[in-house]
Length: 287
Image (cartoon, rainbow, N blue to C red; front, side, top):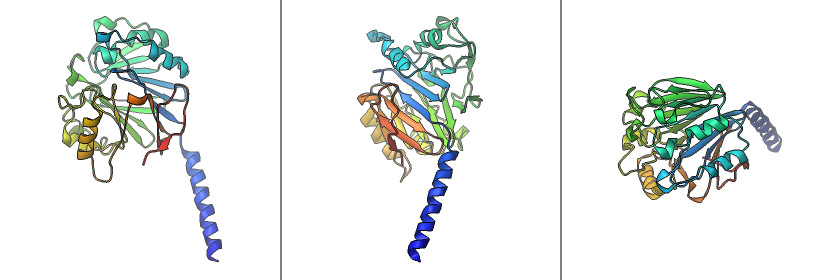
């Protein structure tokens, strides 16, 4: 009798699991693309394509070609939205190059400054829009909430001007920060930023201190993406492990060993290291 009830319970569990799997959405893929000292993130959900930052290190004459090759190998043929956290070359230099190649009339470039800087005008396609604290919008199945900077008068030419915004997909929240996290971010958006899923750590690492301990404790992310080449990786790990909530220690990734993918169906989160463009393994389930 006990074995029979065990079999029944197992069957019900399998049915429940199947029903849950059927209710999940298409896969969202967040690519952290290995670009040396620069930052570039690609987000895809079916036909929706979003870029975050994408620059070059002009101090060492870094080439744009590896990024263009990666996008081509990933099957990208358009960009719906391009979020630029601030207008430093290592985050913004390729705005026009990417807009000319992948822009549509409907493409929008978003930034923290009121106007697109003159050196990026005019865009070949689409338009520019300022994103301000508290603004929300939809891009395909993605929901976006701007959570900083607090001042609407930023120029986008300073680290502290960095655009901070959340990307929602299903039950998951991804926070992008550029070079700096607004000090008052969690006080203004306490509920939205409580124990997020993925944090793109500020590019300037911890010298100078670009994210306050209180903010880190509130975010307590499950995954931390360390930007650039991962030069500050050990410092970031030490800081985050000290400040994050107990029993929620994050998993860390950087592009030191190649491209990184974070994959979400809206309910479960997977991670994969050193992934070639156009290849999408299931990776490991993030606890």
